[in-house]
Image (tube, rainbow, N blue to C red; front, top):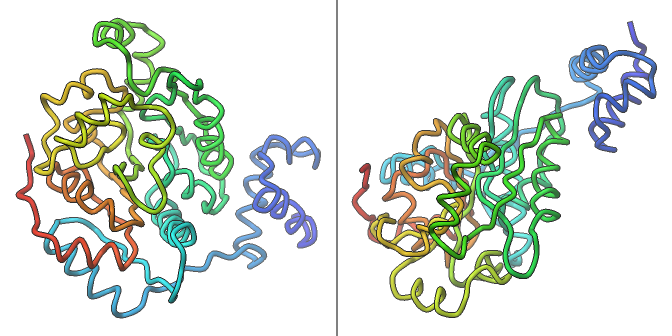
Length: 321
């Protein structure tokens, strides 16, 4: 039986230094399975602890109202007075990380749509090994200015490091120039492999893309859309989920850019059993209402200001087609 000092050393390497179990096993001269057992023993001995901080009573009341009105499991994040936009995002990201910790288990496939919000979530995951977990990228990240590979790898890599998971990247453009190119790419076996993993996902994590806001969405701020794209979308769409744009009623069909996008369309995304959406900005409420109307969200993590703005807005009848 390993002594407490060794358990602490292994726990520090894994949870604080973010080393993989394989690297720890090599340094400690043991097998990977032994490292896994040592991490379990560290938690059982109280060397590693997990704290769940309850929300305030005011947030609980709002959660219940959101659940009744929109049919979702809601977590409302109370905010300190005077909190800034970036700190606000990280408050929501931290709670979203805890929701993921409860939702993701051994053998699962987790789909992640890259973006400002999911990147913040990846920084607040509790590191703990999960057997045979796979993380798959839900939408392409390339544009005319960059490959997007570095950014996507960094975001998904943090999920992989936390769970000791296998990552599957989706090396295609966020938006294709031509519909025909997208159709041809979707026939490639390498792309079909990633699409099959997306379709088999047990959990999906995404934010809401919006035209404005205190913390800009990457799709809108970093060269993914042309001037004509922006003009057309501003007149018809209220936001996007996984780079698929939605009208205010949750519809997506007939928007030309959606024919060239790389993300899963609503009928595909709705097949994922747990669909966790994190939002930390009132400017995203129109897009969030559209996502709720489209039936894309099962679990919502939102700060209290955005939650109250959501409740003050008129709900849109839910679409399931």
